[in-house]
Image (cartoon, rainbow, N blue to C red; front, side, top):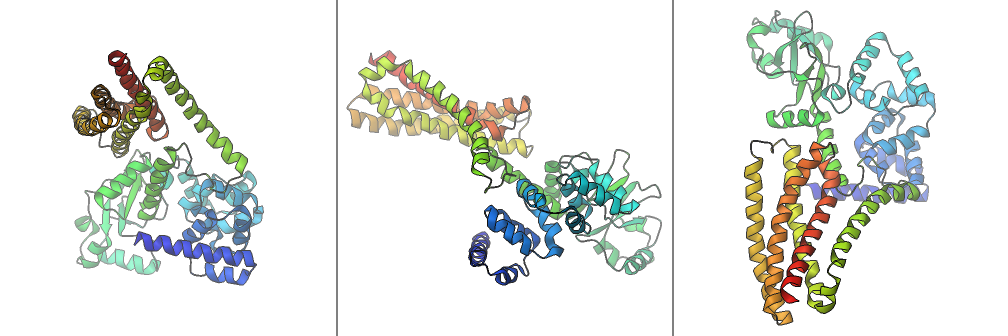
Length: 451
C-alpha cells in the first residue's frame, strides 16, 4: 500500500512538472482538482522555487489557507513572503482555530493585526486561548470546537440539541460533559447516545473514567496516549479541570510524522522543517557546521592512529585490517544507540530497567564479538599467514564491540541529562568513541605483541 502511494505521488509530480514546463496552466489546474490540501503541500515541497511559485498561483484560492498549514515552516515562510496582506487575511479567515494558531506564528505583524481586528470577540478569545500555550503542548494542539452538554439533561434533550445544531465538528466521536462552570466531568460517546433510553439522563450513561489531557502535556505524550488508548478525540483541560478544547486524531498523526522526520533528519544534523530546495549557499552553510564537527572528530581519530605510526611502518597488515575493527564497532554501537533513542522517546527506558537493558546489550555485543572475531581471525590468519595477527584482531573486535554497546547505551542518557537531543549528536559522538577505542585496542595490542 505504501509503495502504491509513493508511486502515485511520483507519477503526479512527473505529470505536474511536465505541465509546468510546457506552460499548460489549465492542465495544471486539472491535475490539482480533487487533491487534498496536504497532497498539494507535498507537491509544493517537491518543486524547485520557480515551478513552486507558478503552482502556488494556480492553487484554488479556497484551498490556499489549508495548503499553507500543510507545508513545512521554511516553504511556508517563502510562500507567505510573496503574498499581500489582504490576501493573507482572506485565506486564513475560515481556518480551524488550531491551524490558524500554528499559521499565525509565521505571519507578518501587519497581517496578524488585520486578522485579529477582523475577528469577532468570541473567535479572538478562542485563538488567544490556543496561542497562550507552546505549540508543542496539548494546549497548542487543541481546537476550540468541542460539543458540550450537561450531565443533568436527558438523552432526548441532547439528541434534539444536535438536530437543532444541524452539524457537528469533524472527528466528533464523543460529546464532552461539563458542569455550569465548564469543569470537565466525563464523555458521552455518540454510540452510547444513540443506543440509550431517551429518558435516561446523561449522568446515568456518561463515561466518567476518561481523564482530560492537561493543556501543558507535551505533544509526544499526547500522541502516546492516543496510541495506547485508541482515541479519536480527547478533551483538554487546565489546572482547575476546566474544559479548554479538544485534540483530534488528525493533529496527532501530524505530531507522529513530525517526530519521525525529526529523528531521521537530526541524525544527519538537519532540520525537518528545512526546504529541500533551499538556496545552495544557505544549505551549504547549514551543513558546514555538522561537517566541521565531524572533521574535528576525524582528526581526533587520526591523531590516535598517528601515535602508532612506528608500528604501522613495520607491520603493514595492521593498516590493512584496521578499518574492520572501527567499522564493526560503529555498527554494533549504532544498533544499541538506536534502541536507546527509541526507548527514551517512547518512555520505555528509565531508572527501573536501565541496568537490565545495559546487561543485555553488553551480552549481545560480547556474543556477536566472539562469533565474528573468530571469522575475522581465521580470514586474517589465512591472508597474512600469521596466527598472532589473527588473535590480535579478534581480541580488538571483542573489546570494541563491548565498548560500543557501553557507548551506545550511555551517550543518549548523558546527552539527555545535559539537555541535548540524543538523535542530533549521538551518532557523531558514538562514531568517535568506537573509532578511537577500536584503533587503540587493535594498534595497542599489535604494538605490545608484534614489536
